[in-house]
Every structure is written in structure tokens, then in C-alpha cells.
Amino acid sequence: MRNWISLQADFGDLQYRKNVYVFALKMAFLAVILSGVIIALTMPSLDLLGLLPVTLAHAIGFSAIFSWLIGGTVSGILSLFAGFAMRDLALSRAEFKKLSRTDTLSGLLNRRAFTEALEDTDGNASLVIFDVDRFKAINDRFGHGCGDAVIIAVSSMLTSAFDEMSVVARLGGEEFGVIVSGEPLEARMERIESVRARIAGGAIRAEGHDIRITVSGGVADLVAGRNKQAVYASADRALYLAKALGRNRVVHEREGLHHAWHGLVDNGVDGENGGSESDNMMQASGI
Image (cartoon, rainbow, N blue to C red; front, side, top):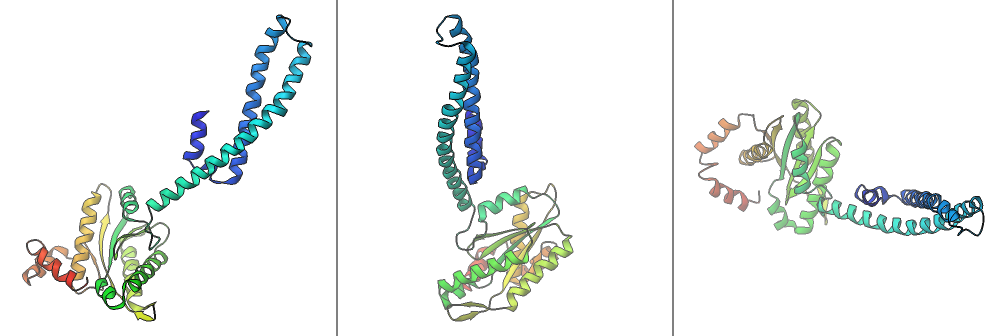
């Protein structure tokens, strides 16, 4: 009984009002059944001892009626109060769980929830890391209120661009993550590229300003058995390369990443030995 009651709150059954009434009816019925069993076990013994003021049949009948009227009613009312208290607890727990997995500004999943979704994804999917180009410059020029409006607008565009099979999250700052599933790689890349083009082709209205933005993206493939941290690191490197190649573009990890990266190294942008210096230069430019 105790475990069953606990499961109602754990699984969220009591979040719905009608389930509270069903819970109260079940508890009242169980109370009546229990009292009936007690009556059936004790009345014959009392009759043998001569302690019943009426016949055994009448005693059992009266006891059954009172158990239904009194026991069932009282237990039902008490269960109803307990059910609504458990409902409030279940709703609070559900809200807390939602808040712990949601980014408050964008309404998207946060990094923690996205990481869990990434770990649960296995095969036929792509990980995309989007980053708003020169976001620091937007904040510096238009103010943080406009910066927040940009984050909200990009979140909305990403949500509308990807179907329910995909997972969209804000990873922090101006960085977003998307797990694109359910399509061949070519179709996934076309969709990702169309999102980039759509963002670049419009303007975001905020506090009297028309703010034009672009995003860069890095893509890595999720295949069965591949380490998820390696996938994320590869997408992050592809994003960095997209930034280094001029921003406002999407780079896939297999699109000549190795040769393109070493081409940048030859031109003085070293992704390993000179990484700190290039990072500082990009951050200073608002990347």
C-alpha cells in the first residue's frame, strides 16, 4: 500500500484532478474490503463466546452496512484530502524538474538536459553547435536588452525550423545546440544550412532597432558506438573553423576539416599551439 501511494506521486498520476478522485475511491473501497475481512474473521468468534447481542447473521449485516457508510465515507474523505496534498507535491516536483532542465531566457532546454539527450541519441543523427556571430558587439552597441531579444528570436527560429524529433537547446551565452534526427545526412545538412540562411536573411526588431545577425555552425555525425564527447569536440572544432573562415557559414566535420585547418595554420592561425592567441583575437572581435 505504501509503495503504491508513493508511485502515484513519483509517476505524476496525481497531477490530474480526476485521478485524485479515483485515488480517493480506491482507498475507500480498500478500507471497506479490509473492514469486511475483519468482520468475517471476528464475528464468528464473538458469537461462540456469546458476546453478540443479536444473531450472527444480523451482526454481520449491521457491521457490513456501518463499514460501508462510515468506514467508506471517512476513509474516502481522508483519502481525498491526502490525494490533493500529494497532487500539490507532484506538481511542485514536476515544476522543479522542468525548471532544472530549462533555460529561463529562451525557454529551451539547458546544457544539462541537452547533454542527457545527447547521451541517449544513438545513430542516424547530427549534432549542430550554432553560435551567434559577433554577439559581444551587439551587446556593446545596442545594449543587453537587445542582446536578450536576439537570443529569444534565434531560439524561436531554431524551434520552428526543426521538427519534434530534433532536440534544441541553449548551451550558454549565444551558443545553441541541436540534435537533428530522422533524415539522411544530406537532408539534415540542407535543413541546417536553410536555418543559417533564414537567420542571415532577416532582421530582429528590438527596442526600436532592426538588428541583422548571422550565425556560424559546426556539425558532427552521431553514429552508433561513437563517443559522445568526441562528437561534441568535433562539432566544436568545426564551429571554430566556420568562424575562422569568415563566419556566417556551416562547416561539417568531414568537409576537408583536416586540410582546411592546416591551411589556416600555414596562414598563421594555429588551432593548437597558437590557439590561445587566436581565441583572444576572436573574443576581442565579439565572436
